Amino acid sequence: MLLPTMAFAQSGTNSPYSQYGLGLLSDQSTGFNRAMGGVAQGMHESNQINHQNPASYAHVDSLTFLFDVGAAFQVTNFKEGNRKLNANNSNFEYVTMSFRVAPRFGMSVGIIPISNIGYNYYTTNKVSEGSTTSYTTLYNGSGGTRVMYIGAGWQPIKNFSIGANIGYLWGSYNRNVVNSYTDENANTIGRYYSAEVNSYKLDIGAQYTFKINSKDNVTLGATYSLGHDLGGSATLQEISNSLNTSDTTTVTHNKAIGIPHTYSVGLAWYHTKKIRLGADYTLQQWSKCIFPDLTNKGYEVTKSAYQDRHKVALGGEFVNNANSRKYLDRVHVRAGASYATPYLNINGHDGPKEISASIGLGLPISNSWNNRSMLNISAQWAQNNATGMIRENTFRINIGITFNERWFQKWKVE
Image 1 (tube, rainbow, N blue to C red):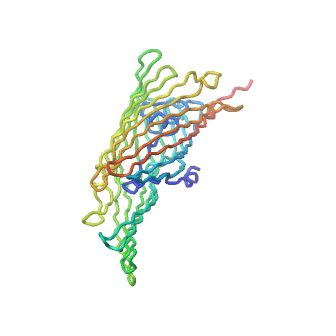
Image 2: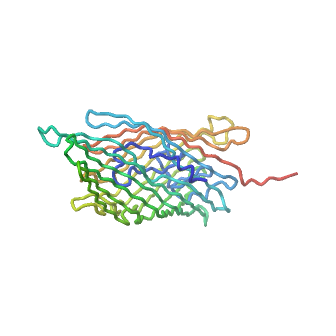
Image 3: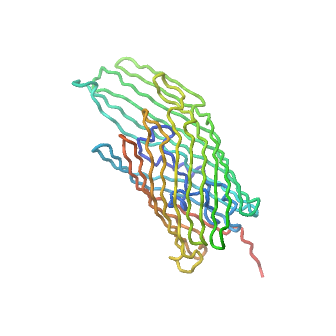
Protein backbone atom coordinates (compact mmCIF):
# COMPACT_ATOMS: atom_id res chain seq x y z
CA MET A 1 0.00 0.00 0.00
CA LEU A 2 2.88 2.39 0.73
CA LEU A 3 4.74 2.00 -2.58
CA PRO A 4 2.11 3.63 -4.86
CA THR A 5 1.83 6.51 -2.41
CA MET A 6 5.55 7.26 -2.70
CA ALA A 7 5.26 7.41 -6.49
CA PHE A 8 3.91 10.94 -6.06
CA ALA A 9 7.09 12.12 -4.31
CA GLN A 10 9.18 14.78 -6.07
CA SER A 11 12.76 15.85 -5.52
CA GLY A 12 11.69 18.74 -3.29
CA THR A 13 14.72 20.92 -4.09
CA ASN A 14 16.16 23.29 -6.68
CA SER A 15 19.54 23.54 -4.96
CA PRO A 16 22.69 23.56 -7.15
CA TYR A 17 24.42 21.88 -4.19
CA SER A 18 22.38 18.76 -4.88
CA GLN A 19 24.57 18.13 -7.96
CA TYR A 20 27.28 16.74 -5.68
CA GLY A 21 27.49 13.44 -3.82
CA LEU A 22 24.15 11.89 -2.93
CA GLY A 23 22.52 15.33 -3.04
CA LEU A 24 21.00 17.27 -0.18
CA LEU A 25 20.62 15.10 2.92
CA SER A 26 17.15 14.87 4.45
CA ASP A 27 16.88 15.43 8.20
CA GLN A 28 14.63 12.32 8.42
CA SER A 29 12.58 13.74 11.27
CA THR A 30 8.80 13.45 11.35
CA GLY A 31 6.09 15.96 12.24
CA PHE A 32 6.31 16.00 16.03
CA ASN A 33 10.09 16.44 16.33
CA ARG A 34 10.74 18.46 13.17
CA ALA A 35 9.56 21.58 15.03
CA MET A 36 12.07 20.74 17.79
CA GLY A 37 15.15 20.90 15.59
CA GLY A 38 14.88 17.18 14.84
CA VAL A 39 15.88 15.98 18.35
CA ALA A 40 14.98 12.32 18.68
CA GLN A 41 17.55 10.14 20.44
CA GLY A 42 16.09 10.45 23.94
CA MET A 43 12.45 10.91 22.91
CA HIS A 44 9.90 8.15 23.52
CA GLU A 45 6.21 8.94 23.18
CA SER A 46 3.20 6.70 23.56
CA ASN A 47 1.25 8.62 20.89
CA GLN A 48 3.99 9.63 18.37
CA ILE A 49 6.35 7.62 16.15
CA ASN A 50 10.09 8.17 16.60
CA HIS A 51 11.73 6.02 13.92
CA GLN A 52 15.12 7.71 14.45
CA ASN A 53 15.64 5.62 17.59
CA PRO A 54 13.86 2.25 17.21
CA ALA A 55 14.16 1.59 20.95
CA SER A 56 11.28 4.07 21.36
CA TYR A 57 8.81 1.61 19.78
CA ALA A 58 8.66 -0.24 23.10
CA HIS A 59 6.73 2.72 24.57
CA VAL A 60 3.87 2.78 22.05
CA ASP A 61 0.45 2.76 23.74
CA SER A 62 -0.91 -0.79 23.97
CA LEU A 63 -4.40 0.13 22.69
CA THR A 64 -3.51 2.24 19.67
CA PHE A 65 -2.44 2.00 16.06
CA LEU A 66 -0.45 5.05 14.91
CA PHE A 67 -0.22 6.23 11.30
CA ASP A 68 1.86 9.33 10.51
CA VAL A 69 2.16 11.06 7.13
CA GLY A 70 3.94 14.32 6.27
CA ALA A 71 4.57 16.85 3.51
CA ALA A 72 6.61 20.05 3.13
CA PHE A 73 6.14 23.29 1.20
CA GLN A 74 9.05 25.67 0.80
CA VAL A 75 10.36 28.87 -0.77
CA THR A 76 14.12 29.19 -1.32
CA ASN A 77 16.08 32.36 -2.05
CA PHE A 78 19.38 31.83 -3.89
CA LYS A 79 21.99 34.59 -3.73
CA GLU A 80 25.31 34.78 -5.58
CA GLY A 81 27.01 38.18 -5.54
CA ASN A 82 24.35 40.70 -6.55
CA ARG A 83 22.11 38.10 -8.21
CA LYS A 84 19.04 36.69 -6.47
CA LEU A 85 16.47 34.10 -7.44
CA ASN A 86 13.48 32.51 -5.71
CA ALA A 87 12.17 28.97 -6.23
CA ASN A 88 9.12 27.13 -4.86
CA ASN A 89 8.92 23.43 -4.06
CA SER A 90 6.57 20.96 -2.45
CA ASN A 91 7.35 17.40 -1.48
CA PHE A 92 5.62 14.38 0.01
CA GLU A 93 8.03 13.57 2.84
CA TYR A 94 7.34 10.35 4.71
CA VAL A 95 4.81 7.79 5.86
CA THR A 96 5.19 5.67 9.00
CA MET A 97 3.03 3.48 11.21
CA SER A 98 3.49 1.85 14.60
CA PHE A 99 1.64 -0.51 16.95
CA ARG A 100 2.14 -2.66 20.04
CA VAL A 101 2.67 -6.40 19.45
CA ALA A 102 3.07 -7.58 23.05
CA PRO A 103 3.72 -6.02 26.46
CA ARG A 104 6.91 -3.91 26.23
CA PHE A 105 7.31 -4.83 22.54
CA GLY A 106 6.33 -2.54 19.65
CA MET A 107 6.86 -2.38 15.89
CA SER A 108 7.00 0.24 13.15
CA VAL A 109 6.91 0.27 9.34
CA GLY A 110 7.54 3.24 7.05
CA ILE A 111 9.24 4.98 4.14
CA ILE A 112 11.70 7.80 4.86
CA PRO A 113 13.75 10.03 2.48
CA ILE A 114 17.57 9.87 2.65
CA SER A 115 18.64 12.42 0.02
CA ASN A 116 17.16 14.65 -2.70
CA ILE A 117 18.54 15.85 -6.05
CA GLY A 118 16.94 18.51 -8.23
CA TYR A 119 18.51 21.47 -10.09
CA ASN A 120 18.49 23.16 -13.49
CA TYR A 121 20.68 26.18 -14.36
CA TYR A 122 23.21 27.42 -16.91
CA THR A 123 26.25 29.67 -17.23
CA THR A 124 27.52 31.65 -20.26
CA ASN A 125 31.16 32.61 -20.84
CA LYS A 126 33.53 33.76 -23.58
CA VAL A 127 35.93 31.18 -24.99
CA SER A 128 38.77 33.62 -24.36
CA GLU A 129 39.28 37.32 -23.70
CA GLY A 130 38.47 39.31 -26.81
CA SER A 131 36.87 36.32 -28.58
CA THR A 132 33.50 36.71 -30.29
CA THR A 133 32.66 33.07 -29.57
CA SER A 134 30.90 32.22 -26.33
CA TYR A 135 29.71 28.95 -24.85
CA THR A 136 26.83 27.99 -22.57
CA THR A 137 27.06 25.20 -20.00
CA LEU A 138 23.76 23.65 -18.97
CA TYR A 139 23.55 21.79 -15.65
CA ASN A 140 20.51 19.72 -14.67
CA GLY A 141 19.78 16.70 -12.55
CA SER A 142 17.12 14.81 -10.65
CA GLY A 143 16.78 11.83 -8.33
CA GLY A 144 17.29 10.84 -4.73
CA THR A 145 17.30 7.92 -2.30
CA ARG A 146 14.75 6.54 0.14
CA VAL A 147 14.47 3.66 2.57
CA MET A 148 11.53 1.42 3.41
CA TYR A 149 12.03 -0.05 6.87
CA ILE A 150 10.48 -2.41 9.37
CA GLY A 151 11.55 -2.07 12.98
CA ALA A 152 10.95 -3.40 16.47
CA GLY A 153 11.60 -2.14 19.98
CA TRP A 154 11.70 -4.18 23.19
CA GLN A 155 11.98 -3.28 26.88
CA PRO A 156 13.69 -6.29 28.51
CA ILE A 157 14.00 -4.61 31.92
CA LYS A 158 12.40 -1.59 33.52
CA ASN A 159 13.58 1.77 32.12
CA PHE A 160 15.82 0.16 29.45
CA SER A 161 14.79 -0.54 25.86
CA ILE A 162 16.54 -1.64 22.68
CA GLY A 163 15.46 -1.72 19.06
CA ALA A 164 16.45 -2.09 15.43
CA ASN A 165 15.31 -1.06 11.95
CA ILE A 166 16.12 -3.11 8.87
CA GLY A 167 15.32 -1.44 5.59
CA TYR A 168 15.51 -1.60 1.81
CA LEU A 169 17.37 1.43 0.44
CA TRP A 170 16.89 2.34 -3.20
CA GLY A 171 17.32 5.31 -5.50
CA SER A 172 18.87 6.72 -8.64
CA TYR A 173 20.06 9.96 -10.17
CA ASN A 174 20.70 11.53 -13.55
CA ARG A 175 23.09 14.49 -13.84
CA ASN A 176 23.91 16.23 -17.09
CA VAL A 177 26.55 18.81 -18.06
CA VAL A 178 26.28 20.02 -21.67
CA ASN A 179 28.46 22.65 -23.40
CA SER A 180 27.23 24.39 -26.57
CA TYR A 181 28.99 27.12 -28.59
CA THR A 182 27.80 30.08 -30.66
CA ASP A 183 30.29 29.02 -33.37
CA GLU A 184 28.52 26.34 -35.41
CA ASN A 185 31.86 24.73 -36.31
CA ALA A 186 32.75 24.09 -32.65
CA ASN A 187 32.12 20.75 -30.97
CA THR A 188 29.23 20.31 -28.53
CA ILE A 189 30.32 18.22 -25.53
CA GLY A 190 27.91 16.57 -23.13
CA ARG A 191 28.59 14.50 -20.03
CA TYR A 192 25.71 12.39 -18.72
CA TYR A 193 26.10 10.86 -15.27
CA SER A 194 23.71 8.21 -13.97
CA ALA A 195 23.63 5.81 -11.03
CA GLU A 196 21.27 3.38 -9.37
CA VAL A 197 21.44 1.75 -5.93
CA ASN A 198 19.51 -1.11 -4.32
CA SER A 199 20.74 -2.28 -0.95
CA TYR A 200 19.91 -2.66 2.74
CA LYS A 201 20.09 -0.30 5.70
CA LEU A 202 20.49 -1.32 9.33
CA ASP A 203 19.98 0.87 12.43
CA ILE A 204 20.16 -0.21 16.08
CA GLY A 205 19.26 1.88 19.11
CA ALA A 206 18.94 1.93 22.88
CA GLN A 207 17.34 4.14 25.54
CA TYR A 208 17.67 4.26 29.30
CA THR A 209 15.55 6.43 31.61
CA PHE A 210 16.86 7.83 34.90
CA LYS A 211 14.21 8.85 37.39
CA ILE A 212 15.34 11.98 39.22
CA ASN A 213 12.25 12.52 41.37
CA SER A 214 8.48 12.11 41.16
CA LYS A 215 8.22 14.86 38.54
CA ASP A 216 11.43 14.67 36.54
CA ASN A 217 13.28 12.03 34.57
CA VAL A 218 16.03 12.00 31.96
CA THR A 219 16.33 9.58 29.05
CA LEU A 220 19.68 8.82 27.43
CA GLY A 221 19.43 7.52 23.87
CA ALA A 222 21.92 6.33 21.28
CA THR A 223 21.81 4.80 17.80
CA TYR A 224 24.24 3.32 15.30
CA SER A 225 23.66 3.01 11.55
CA LEU A 226 25.82 0.56 9.66
CA GLY A 227 27.94 2.06 6.89
CA HIS A 228 28.70 -0.05 3.83
CA ASP A 229 29.06 -0.03 0.06
CA LEU A 230 25.66 0.01 -1.60
CA GLY A 231 26.80 -2.03 -4.57
CA GLY A 232 25.30 0.50 -6.96
CA SER A 233 26.51 1.03 -10.51
CA ALA A 234 27.56 4.45 -11.85
CA THR A 235 27.94 5.39 -15.51
CA LEU A 236 29.44 8.35 -17.35
CA GLN A 237 28.53 8.78 -20.99
CA GLU A 238 30.50 11.49 -22.80
CA ILE A 239 29.19 12.58 -26.20
CA SER A 240 31.07 14.93 -28.53
CA ASN A 241 29.18 16.27 -31.56
CA SER A 242 30.58 18.19 -34.51
CA LEU A 243 29.11 19.03 -37.89
CA ASN A 244 29.86 15.64 -39.40
CA THR A 245 30.77 13.27 -36.58
CA SER A 246 29.60 12.09 -33.19
CA ASP A 247 31.81 10.26 -30.71
CA THR A 248 30.54 8.50 -27.58
CA THR A 249 32.64 7.23 -24.68
CA THR A 250 31.06 5.23 -21.85
CA VAL A 251 32.64 4.35 -18.50
CA THR A 252 30.80 2.22 -15.91
CA HIS A 253 31.81 1.36 -12.33
CA ASN A 254 30.14 -1.26 -10.18
CA LYS A 255 30.10 -0.92 -6.39
CA ALA A 256 30.68 2.80 -6.71
CA ILE A 257 28.54 4.36 -3.94
CA GLY A 258 28.55 4.01 -0.16
CA ILE A 259 26.71 5.22 2.94
CA PRO A 260 28.51 6.21 6.17
CA HIS A 261 28.78 4.70 9.60
CA THR A 262 26.57 7.00 11.70
CA TYR A 263 26.71 7.48 15.48
CA SER A 264 24.09 9.48 17.38
CA VAL A 265 23.63 10.22 21.07
CA GLY A 266 21.15 12.42 22.88
CA LEU A 267 19.42 13.38 26.11
CA ALA A 268 15.79 14.22 26.80
CA TRP A 269 14.48 15.76 30.02
CA TYR A 270 10.84 15.16 30.91
CA HIS A 271 9.15 17.34 33.56
CA THR A 272 5.78 15.83 34.51
CA LYS A 273 3.78 15.71 31.29
CA LYS A 274 4.27 19.40 30.50
CA ILE A 275 7.86 20.01 29.40
CA ARG A 276 10.21 18.03 27.15
CA LEU A 277 13.69 19.28 26.30
CA GLY A 278 16.23 17.42 24.17
CA ALA A 279 19.73 17.66 22.71
CA ASP A 280 21.34 15.40 20.06
CA TYR A 281 24.76 14.97 18.50
CA THR A 282 25.35 13.00 15.29
CA LEU A 283 28.56 11.96 13.51
CA GLN A 284 28.40 10.65 9.93
CA GLN A 285 31.70 9.24 8.68
CA TRP A 286 31.35 10.24 5.04
CA SER A 287 35.13 10.39 4.61
CA LYS A 288 35.17 6.59 4.50
CA CYS A 289 32.57 6.39 1.72
CA ILE A 290 33.30 5.81 -1.95
CA PHE A 291 31.75 7.79 -4.78
CA PRO A 292 32.41 8.14 -8.54
CA ASP A 293 34.01 11.42 -9.59
CA LEU A 294 35.61 12.97 -12.66
CA THR A 295 39.27 13.63 -11.80
CA ASN A 296 42.46 14.40 -13.72
CA LYS A 297 42.85 10.65 -14.20
CA GLY A 298 39.37 10.22 -15.62
CA TYR A 299 36.08 8.96 -14.21
CA GLU A 300 37.04 6.91 -11.17
CA VAL A 301 35.78 5.81 -7.76
CA THR A 302 37.35 7.88 -4.96
CA LYS A 303 36.82 9.06 -1.39
CA SER A 304 37.75 12.67 -2.13
CA ALA A 305 34.14 13.86 -2.55
CA TYR A 306 33.22 13.52 1.14
CA GLN A 307 34.24 14.56 4.63
CA ASP A 308 32.84 13.68 8.06
CA ARG A 309 29.63 15.50 8.99
CA HIS A 310 28.82 16.68 12.52
CA LYS A 311 25.36 17.81 13.56
CA VAL A 312 24.01 19.27 16.81
CA ALA A 313 20.30 19.75 17.50
CA LEU A 314 18.42 21.35 20.41
CA GLY A 315 14.68 21.54 20.97
CA GLY A 316 11.70 21.12 23.24
CA GLU A 317 7.97 21.39 23.71
CA PHE A 318 5.44 22.59 26.26
CA VAL A 319 1.84 21.50 26.81
CA ASN A 320 -0.17 22.90 29.70
CA ASN A 321 -2.40 19.86 30.29
CA ALA A 322 -2.69 17.09 27.72
CA ASN A 323 -5.80 15.71 29.44
CA SER A 324 -7.67 18.99 29.88
CA ARG A 325 -11.12 19.57 28.40
CA LYS A 326 -9.95 23.01 27.28
CA TYR A 327 -8.57 22.85 23.76
CA LEU A 328 -5.80 25.44 24.23
CA ASP A 329 -4.47 23.56 27.26
CA ARG A 330 -3.93 20.51 25.02
CA VAL A 331 -1.99 22.35 22.30
CA HIS A 332 1.73 21.45 22.14
CA VAL A 333 4.09 24.40 21.59
CA ARG A 334 7.48 23.47 20.11
CA ALA A 335 10.77 25.12 19.10
CA GLY A 336 14.25 24.02 18.10
CA ALA A 337 17.47 24.71 16.20
CA SER A 338 20.30 22.74 14.58
CA TYR A 339 23.74 23.19 13.04
CA ALA A 340 25.54 20.79 10.68
CA THR A 341 29.00 20.90 9.13
CA PRO A 342 29.33 20.11 5.40
CA TYR A 343 29.86 16.58 4.12
CA LEU A 344 30.90 17.68 0.61
CA ASN A 345 34.21 18.78 -0.87
CA ILE A 346 33.57 21.05 -3.86
CA ASN A 347 36.63 21.74 -6.01
CA GLY A 348 38.88 21.38 -2.99
CA HIS A 349 36.71 23.60 -0.75
CA ASP A 350 34.23 22.82 2.00
CA GLY A 351 30.64 22.47 0.86
CA PRO A 352 27.73 24.30 2.51
CA LYS A 353 27.18 24.21 6.24
CA GLU A 354 23.57 24.13 7.39
CA ILE A 355 21.89 26.25 10.08
CA SER A 356 18.18 25.92 10.87
CA ALA A 357 15.60 27.12 13.39
CA SER A 358 11.98 26.08 13.74
CA ILE A 359 8.80 26.66 15.71
CA GLY A 360 5.58 24.70 15.61
CA LEU A 361 2.37 23.45 17.16
CA GLY A 362 0.84 20.09 17.86
CA LEU A 363 -2.90 20.62 17.39
CA PRO A 364 -5.24 17.92 18.75
CA ILE A 365 -7.86 16.73 16.27
CA SER A 366 -11.20 16.33 18.01
CA ASN A 367 -14.45 15.02 16.59
CA SER A 368 -17.29 12.71 17.54
CA TRP A 369 -15.29 9.51 17.03
CA ASN A 370 -11.66 10.44 17.77
CA ASN A 371 -9.92 12.92 20.07
CA ARG A 372 -6.44 11.37 20.06
CA SER A 373 -5.08 12.23 16.60
CA MET A 374 -2.85 15.27 16.09
CA LEU A 375 -1.95 17.79 13.40
CA ASN A 376 1.75 18.69 13.64
CA ILE A 377 2.60 21.92 11.83
CA SER A 378 5.86 23.87 11.93
CA ALA A 379 7.65 26.76 10.26
CA GLN A 380 11.35 26.24 9.57
CA TRP A 381 14.13 28.52 8.36
CA ALA A 382 17.26 26.88 6.99
CA GLN A 383 20.41 28.32 5.45
CA ASN A 384 22.98 26.51 3.31
CA ASN A 385 26.10 28.60 2.87
CA ALA A 386 29.68 28.03 1.71
CA THR A 387 32.41 30.66 1.49
CA GLY A 388 32.55 32.20 -1.98
CA MET A 389 29.59 30.14 -3.20
CA ILE A 390 25.82 30.39 -3.44
CA ARG A 391 23.90 31.23 -0.28
CA GLU A 392 20.50 29.55 0.12
CA ASN A 393 17.82 30.71 2.56
CA THR A 394 14.80 28.43 2.75
CA PHE A 395 11.49 29.03 4.50
CA ARG A 396 9.64 25.75 4.88
CA ILE A 397 6.18 24.76 6.16
CA ASN A 398 6.10 21.19 7.46
CA ILE A 399 2.75 19.47 7.93
CA GLY A 400 2.29 16.06 9.50
CA ILE A 401 -0.81 14.24 10.65
CA THR A 402 -0.62 11.47 13.24
CA PHE A 403 -3.73 9.31 13.19
CA ASN A 404 -4.24 7.60 16.54
CA GLU A 405 -6.79 4.79 16.41
CA ARG A 406 -7.88 2.47 19.23
CA TRP A 407 -7.63 -0.78 17.27
CA PHE A 408 -6.77 -3.02 20.19
CA GLN A 409 -9.34 -1.96 22.79
CA LYS A 410 -11.28 -4.86 24.29
CA TRP A 411 -15.00 -4.21 24.58
CA LYS A 412 -17.12 -5.66 27.38
CA VAL A 413 -20.76 -6.54 26.65
CA GLU A 414 -23.13 -6.43 29.61
